[in-house]
Length: 216
Image (cartoon, rainbow, N blue to C red):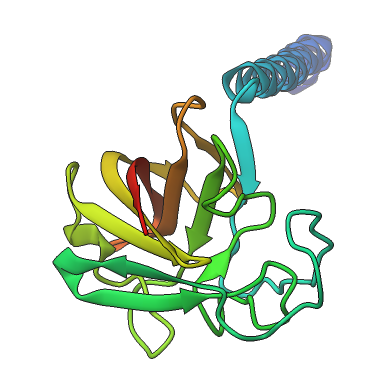
């Protein structure tokens, strides 16, 4: 009887092995299908991202650890200066701070409010002056109070003897990905302010202001 049981067990072993093999095959097939689906999902996401950003103004967003290199800029003639070339004033939050030539080594978010590479100065028709600054704590958190601003609030830019008066028209947030899309009216002069979102380290807030008038 003992020999008969052993014989039966030996006959059953191939069935167990086949069952285990089938399970392994199914698991392998699942993971292959999953990886394929994931790859297609990533491709679709990348495609939609490209469509989303196509035709919109893209600027690099500077994280705290990023460094700024001096750049060439055909908008400004003459030597580069480390002196302020203009001032940004926001009465509602009692803010006034100078900004520098984009080519200046002091045009650094770790030292000042930063005129972002690719933006324009206020006297460029239909241009967009993009300024980024830190918020949070510490002496360099120049834009810490921007969260108080609302649509309709006013900002001034003094540049080359004239005062450019802007009114905020839109405020929105985007994830910190290294780039952002700026939504603005390309038929008017614009001031764009960028900083970290108040009490949220994963997003940044963008303030869009349109030119109302020029004084002086």
